Each structure stands twice: as C-alpha cells, then as structure tokens.
Image (cartoon, rainbow, N blue to C red; front, side):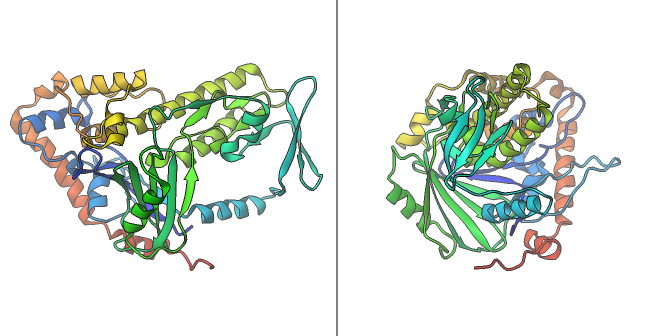
Amino acid sequence: TQGTYKLGIQFEGWGAFDDSYIHAFGLVGRGLGLLPFQHYWLRGRAEGVAGPLSDYVLNALAAGANRFAHVERKADSALPPMPYAYHFDATLYAQFLRRFAEERGVTRREGRIVEVLRDAESGDVSAVRLADGGMVEGDLFVDCSGFRSLLLGETLGVGYQDWSQWLGCDRAVAVPSARAEPLVPYTRSIAQKAGWRWRIPLQHRTGNGHVFSSQHISEDEATAMLLAGLDGEALAEPRTIRFQSGRRERFWDRNVVAIGLASGFIEPLESTAIHLVQTAISRLLDFLPNGPVAAADRDSFNRLAVFEIEKIRDFVILHYAANGRSGEPFWDALRTMPLPEPLAQRIAMFRASGRIVREHDELFDVPGWVQVMIGQGIVPESWHPLADQLDQGQLKGFLDTVKGAFARDVERMPGHADYVARFCPAGAVDA
C-alpha cells in the first residue's frame, strides 16, 4: 500500500495564524500518584519550570526529530510505548483487501443495482436486482453504497442528521504530487482562510487535499490554493469530492446495516473514517444474528454506534471552535457558534480545572483532548490540588526527568525514511 508510519497530526495555523502544535498519539508525560501528567505540567507552566507540552510527549519528540522505531511497553521501564497509525494509498489498500478476501473464499459479484425488493409482510429487504437481470438475495444486507445510502436511506427511508451547523466544510479537492523530502512520520493539517489543507507522505508520492466551505470560497479558488501549496509536481488532475457531515438517524434498521459513508460521515480532519468502518464491522460481528434480528440487539447496536460517532464529532468540532484566526469570516463564525452541550461542558470543565473525563471507550482519550485544547489556547485556570504536594524543586526534577528520558529514547531511533526503507519498502506501483 506504499505505507508510512504516522505518529500524529501537526496542526499549523489553527490556534493563531503562526502557531503550530502536534496532536501526537500515545501518552502525555507520565502520571504521578493519582494524577495524570497535565496537572503537574500546568503547575510547572505557571511557575516557569515547564517547557512546551510537546517536550513531554514521546511521539511528538520523535515526530519533530523525524524519527521512528517500534517502542513497546516494558514491565521494568517507566517509559511509555510509542503507538502509531499508518499513512497508505487508499486505492492500493482497497485492492489489497479485495485480494485478501477473494483468496480466502469470498465471492465478488459486480453489477449496478437497479431495484431493491422488500418482503411484503415484514418490510425487510429481500433481494437486489442487478442491471444484467441477476438477483442477489439475503437475510442480512450491509449497505456500503456511500453517501447515497441506497438501502438504508433511499429504500428504508432512514433520515439523516445534518451537522453542518458545527462542521461547515462541505467540499474537498484532492491531488497527488511527487514524493517530497523529508519523509516525515506525521500528517500535516494546514489551516486556510476557509478550511484546511492536508499533506500525507507516502513512499511513492504525497497525498494532498484542501477541505473547504463552498459558502466562503469557490472550487476554482480552493483548487488554485491547493496546487500553489504543493511540495512537488502534481501527478494527476485535481478531483473534487462533495460531502455533508452528519449521520443516519439509525445505523441498523430492519435487516439492513449501514457501514462507512452510507451510515454517516465526519470530515477528514482527524482521519477517523476507516476507524469507524473497522469498529462497525467488529460491532456487527458482536451482534450477528442467528435468525431474525432481535429489536433489542438492533437498538443496542445503534446506541453504541451513535455514542461513538458523536464523541468523535465533538472532538473534531473542538478544533474549529477553539481557533484563533480572527478576522476571517469562516473562522470567526465557528469560534462563536453554539456548541453541542457535551462538548461545551467538557471545554468548561477543562478550562476551570484541567480535568478531562473520558466516557466509556470513546476513541479519543485524555491525552488527545489535552493536546488539542492546550495547542489551541484553552489553558486551564487551575490544576488538581494534589499537584501542590511536591515542592518546586521536586516538581522541576519530575518534569526534567520525564523530558530527559523521552529525549534520550528518541536519540536512539533511526530516521523515519531509513526505518521504512530497511523494514518495509514497497515495490514500484504499476502505471
């Protein structure tokens, strides 16, 4: 898939025009006693003995030094693991998955659906008719028809919740460009006057895109801005994608389960689309029926799916709501918009006391929320009182120990490009 490693996302120009911070995967510092690290850091910052938050994040230090290695948690070490994600070519990934599935007995039948048939008594989908006249019957259907949502939306009439009041971008223009050096282990997210640009380094090329609001900028201008910001020669014509952030009222209705874009979409700011596909597949396996679908199973599936996507939605909204780009209509409106109540409460609690309460198994954990809030200027007014149990010398010693241990770990890592070339080089891509 021409993949590279991803240690986090660097946000450029989101807090203020010239600001930059990284939302790095993994832990922020290390806890001490009963408290997470941010409370000690907040006190150290107030007393002038703490550096930038990224000094205490292993992934951030490695990303900043353009280094990578597999770092696992060891029982006799206080150092954290260094979790990572991947950058990869989506088309090559889809081809890989197809080969993987077909080699293990999956039958792929291609054809355009021209009619959806429903059982007269139950209302369930009973079959789909293809353009060649063939029929595909089934007991359970998975709707992967993209934004159209052919089965769940069009056939069963399940409505769509529009989230454009919080997530105003509704277009993306994308273009690949020649590979640029250095091959960094992170995604760049660069704020623009009416949206943001992505830069994703792969082994054979660089992925680029511009996500924007069509109410504030035209597609032609957005495309021109994207092309002007490329680090290398464009390798194809720009391609525009239209979308609307939101979700279906239900993800599973009758005997149809929607997965992927057919169920909903959150703009790509934190790269969550494939994660939502993966968790939906896992959840479907957990609730896979052995006969008629039980209403209680379906309701539980929907409740868990809604919780997951709405927590991710709130995390993405946070980036826009906490922006510091004054004087630009797109950003000014987002900075002053009413927020979903759970997000407003989370921001207020963090601003007051530095606390983040993670609910159940939501995707983004405390370190992620802390990095984005601090990175975009939401600095708490106080910290947990137990952080005052250390005297200033002890506090400084603790902070310096964490920072020094992480820095030494990073110094021992090879460069990201060297690591990829040695352990996972990809072959040439067929034209």
